[in-house]
Amino acid sequence: MKIIQQIDALKSYALSCKKQGKTIGLVPTMGYLHAGHQSLIRKSAAENDITIVSIFVNPTQFGVGEDFESYPRDLAHDTAAAEAAGASVIFHPTAEEMYPKGYHTYVSVQEITSVLCGKSRPTHFQGVTTVVSKLFHISHADRAYFGQKDAQQLAVIMRMATDLNMDTIIVPCPIVREPDGLAMSSRNTYLSAEERKQALVLSQGLYAAEKLFADGERSTAFLKETVRQKILTAPLARIDYVELLTYPELTPCETVKSQCLLAVAVKFGTTRLIDNILLEVPEK
Ligand code: AMP
Image (cartoon, rainbow, N blue to C red):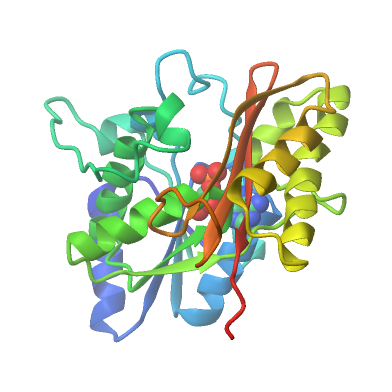
């Protein structure tokens, strides 16, 4: 497996692969890889000749006072984890390589970036869409793999790819969870033992609502309240939001009539966790 740090080197490698008729899958990540990331890499490796995994803690998607500096980094571990899952290349650029002096261009998706995480992280998605468009151009990817764990990010990237007529196909991948239900995240490492225990209320609340939904409950307010009440049983939890919106449009709805996203963001100390489930209305 190759490790490439320079944009030009990755571009030439990707172009030479394309010339040989090979397909390229891209898995953008911020590193500190876990089984969730590896599921994306495995899917890409199964569907493409070449899989490029980018590992880049992207400064433009962190707000002032967020965890850019402390975000966990471990390239040796990531190299082994990416290779074990079938990656062909790791792209690991520096911030100066991606945003050299004089850099002034940003990609910004409107509307659906102002709800959910966009409310408390107003500059976050512009950083994500900017870096992801750069990665699409640099990697010449036929397909790019994104986790449903970051459901709003996935919706924003699908919107961007459609609106800007990008050729890269966006492939959604299911959430990978710990055996007890906690959605895997590089940020779980910040949690104390007690916070880790209490963090289970996120998935438990979502599952309780999912069960009610399966039994026929369609009221947005009731489903949200079910999740909220479960989260409130954890004394250390501070709710940022519990939301239910249509998906992937992310518009409000009073009752669930089409596919919807039930999503939560909860802080434990300074650690902000997100989780979600999709509610699919059965066809009649
Ligand atoms: P990150 O490194 O957190 O920026 O995540 C990189 C990619 O991995 C994103 O597309 C995430 O949605 C995806 N991802 C992160 N955690 C999980 C998980 N638990 N299950 C599935 N995909 C995930």
